[in-house]
Image 1 (cartoon, rainbow, N blue to C red):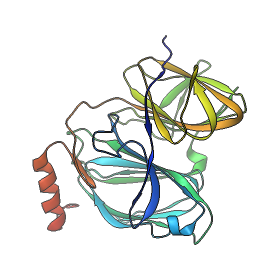
Image 2: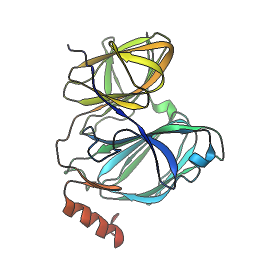
Image 3: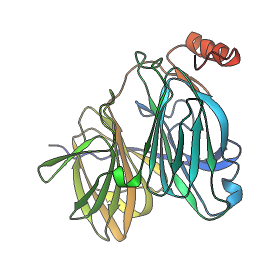
Length: 281
């Protein structure tokens, strides 16, 4: 067994998306800054309504999945399939764009804190034109694993702790994503397996933590080196961080805004389909 270390740090940059929502973007800040199979990771968090109130009005996607994890706040998802989902504290929305989906994500609060994350997970060429889908995952449906160093909320994938294997709320994806929210007690420590074949990262968003003797940078993608497990230790105030890992696809990625395909020709087809009303047909 080999402990993973941090091989690269990608600090999140402040930007905006949607109708002016302020975010911090690590993966995806440039099209060359990705971690196969992950295309983008956005952190949003503000108590100022002006930073988020305009939301994300109706817009299209094709060729990947979005995973939205709400730490605090209330947002409404609606799409052309008729899906409607309320995303609240601790909940997750997992949307498969597949061949095409048109949706909106709009705040349902006029003030107060809204914070969370959105992850873009790529689909292989064989899956890009599958039917669109949507899953609304309630907070109580996300397994919580009590460990000696704190608590693990297991959004996706499987993890073995003290000899027992636990399944997350989402499994069965071809890229075998592992997505966990690690909530560590003051000076708490946790050791977890991370498949050796997976690319992975840690994203610290509260407190202080280290991986071995390496301090993790807050609001950054701390990209993991080779290995098959991690040991994360929190500082005196505790820590919260995301563990995200997945099996790389190893295919070309061509992106144009909300469309992610394998070739330029497929992007041009997506644009024609959207223009002609065939994106979701």
